[in-house]
Image (cartoon, rainbow, N blue to C red; front, side, top):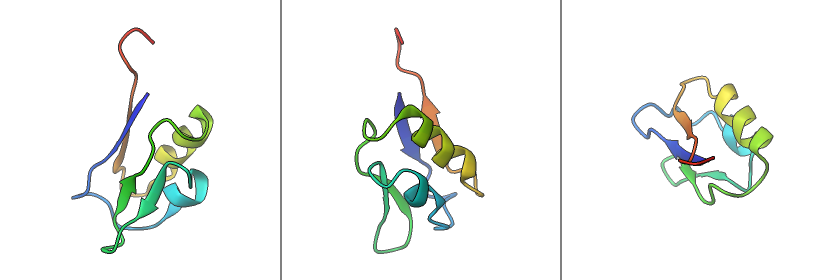
Length: 65
């Protein structure tokens, strides 16, 4: 599963970091960035994406998964 953040949409709420701290962090501009898209569990990545109030996190299934 690939994980990406649409920087233009991110409002820096930090929910992604709360639910998947091994996957996300907030940068110096308080915008979420992916630090390791394979870290944590699929459930943690999904919870982080689902909790994003701006809908800025996208999870894409890898081909053949």
